[in-house]
Length: 193
Figure 1 (cartoon, rainbow, N blue to C red):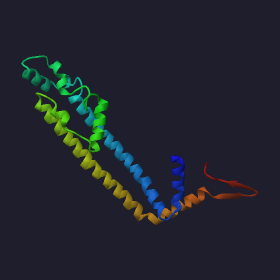
Figure 2 (figure 1 turned 120 degrees about the vertical axis):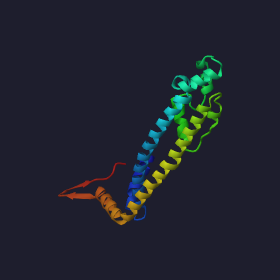
Figure 3 (figure 1 turned 90 degrees about the vertical axis):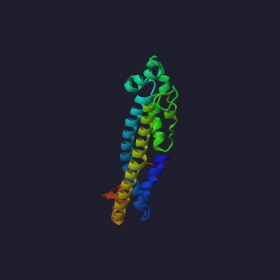
């Protein structure tokens, strides 16, 4: 059904008002794919950082925090305090959960509760909150403004070339569906059903 809809959409490019808009959507979808690759790269980096600091077994990656916890507990085993970093069902318990949490945070569904639950380690609390704020700033403000600028540029380009593009797309459509007369036999080139 979707493929049929896409085929009908390509036929609508011959319409003078819908043709440029369909071309604009096509060009914008390419721009959005480039933006999503860039967003995914940032999400992978931040998800790895959050997993390294707050994931299960994150103590070896935090020597300063482990030493502080050891001193705060009066010399008790720092490895036993891994439950303090995050719970087994926390937002950063695995790399996959951390990546999903970053995706949800980029959509606006974030919470600082995971960091406030860390006991005896204000460094980890502060680091987590600052890193989440940096991630939200980069994703919500910088990358979304970049997406808006890219899409506005595409819109401007299509608007300035609207009539030329429309006539060109219409000529391509006519050529694609044209019936060619070749001597005594007729060759009909129609799109597949």
